[in-house]
Length: 331
Image 1 (cartoon, helix red, strand yellow):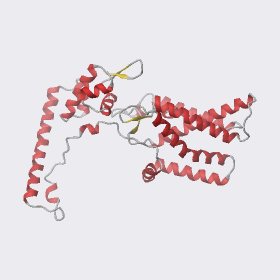
Image 2 (cartoon, helix red, strand yellow):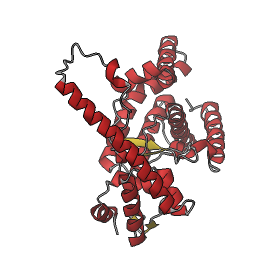
Image 3 (cartoon, helix red, strand yellow):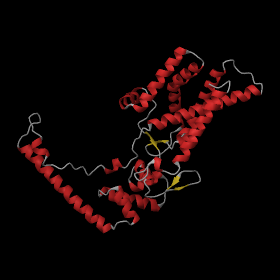
């Protein structure tokens, strides 16, 4: 069955379903078309997770129950005791509300210290809002992935111009500008298609990142194209400044240096990151998030496939940099 059918049968949001799958509670099969095909057993597992989450069990407790690491009777008894404590806390809060009302307390003159010690800060509901993928910025890795993608595009553009030159194809005199435009063309096509079909460019893939909607679906073709176009607009200044710096324009070199400083301040400074994310990083969407396969039990850097990907990314960056800047038509 499709994820829409699972939503209807379980009453869970798509984001919750994908999150529970990522956390290892079940694994949906893949159909011939590449889409997930959920089974009745998957639905039963989701309903069990939903039941115990509504009873206030943590995901760790539910995972232990599923694996058989703890008995259900013991877990229920412990949860019942916890609910009794929560009920006492709620009763105390209700009594305090009545007292404040009977005392005709006024907000302006209220002394909160008289009452704070009598309350336990409890907040049992809203568990499902926590069961979503956390929003992680991955600033440094995204910057490295972007630079790697740019090196790949500019290398392919330089390679195409080199091959064309050796085949006798008439080329513009300004091969630097031609290579820049060609690399932007490659970026427009490849990034749009890769984000739409896989959620990651080559740079993002090697560094373990994937860009998805909150519900786990890929960007639509229109969304991917619009995002890529906006990235290209903001990225054009950086690329052109770098190009003119190599060509010897000292003024543009200073501009490139300033832009480089701004980008790194954006990536590493919390305040700068917050401001620039808001006013400069305008292609972000509220329903988009980056994932890197991390779970509560294992981070991205603890996974076995992390090191090979990072090593390949580094070697590829070195090769592209050498190849591009060593050729006459390279930037």
